[in-house]
Image (cartoon, rainbow, N blue to C red):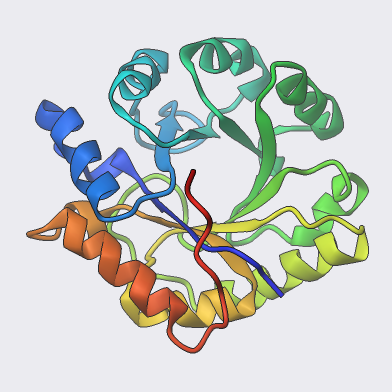
Length: 231
């Protein structure tokens, strides 16, 4: 059973002209992480943020920065994002033929290392590195754009990822990203998700702070999950 819940608003839908204010708002709402989707225009269609955005976030955020590399050659960028201040870096199994080596490289930089699986990718591809992962990120939409509809099969995929980690004796959390909103949050947490990434449902709301609080409240509804302790 999962033990903690973390809400990770994704700046993919934030107002970049007032990024500091956007981060402050979700932190007031209880955000535990700030999620940064780095897209290269090759592995995914869109082109988004680079290391300077992470550096800027580190200066204004009081919570850790969670960097999701949606790029074709993630190993080329690990050091850059670690130096920028990322606390977590995840890479896609679909573009990481030497995944164990890449995870080891991330950890050597003092950063938590995660692996990401797309909707059409089986979590079984992580079996050989299950004991090495600091977290698993399940994509519940096809990566590339915010505001997509949640893929319902992702709930069972979260269960499969949790089971894979448990069988490896690894208590690392399962993270889920894509179409996350109050209507599906509780089911996903019951399935084993501990980190909920949300972009449009938070930053496109009239009040992002309240949207962050609502997402947590909905996720904790009948899920027997405790809030993480904040120091």
